[in-house]
Amino acid sequence: MSGKVIGVLALQGAFIEHVNHLERCVDLNGGSYGQAVSVITVRTKEELWKCDGLVIPGGESTAMSLIAQRTGFYPDLYEFVHNKDKKIWGTCAGLIFISDVLANENTLVKTLELLHVKVKRNAFGRQAQSFTQECDFSGFIPGCTDFPATFIRAPVIEEILDSEDVKVLYRLEREGSPQNGLVVAVKQGDNVLATSFHPELAETDLRFHDWFIREFILK
Ligand SMILES: NC(=O)CC[C@H](N)C(=O)O
Image (cartoon, rainbow, N blue to C red):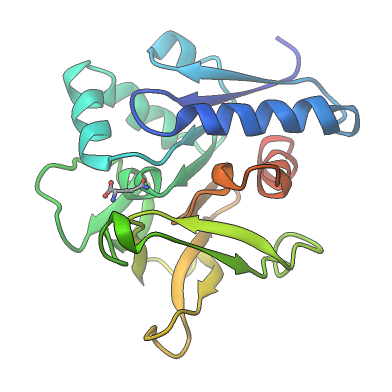
């Protein structure tokens, strides 16, 4: 099949927002992608193996992990994300689900052991402590100085376990945060991206998803 296929894992959580954002990118910018890009939801292994990349959305990592195990989907997911030719992006619960080690609340989450980091779940507190903060991502997304990043019961990356392979993309500064900020976006090798926040909730702002398509899917 010609062109690239992006899958959005649809077992649980905020997958439809990712699908909408990716489809809008293709509608608006597809002409400059140089090849066809299509977007599908993924619930089965047949759908999964059609994909060149997989977005693992926010939601509840406990539920996502349990559903993957109970439906027998976990082994294929594990194999897929560990294939270095596949481009993987975990947001929020998705970040938790792909990480190696959880610092807390870890009993019910069997992770995919892909991203070499230690993650703290619900690092900013409960739902009521959710927030949107304008972030300067121009260090990795050219010209993107003012992205509205939404954090909902978000995790933070407490420790990078393999500093050769994992590069910090963004450190968030919040009141009370350590001097050099909280790690909320990383890249591992050239095929894995993880963000604590939800770019798919930035209503009309497609810059993050467009960057993901160009820098990961099309490379
Ligand atoms: N918005 C989210 O994805 C929240 C993640 C959730 N707190 C978890 O631990 O899985």
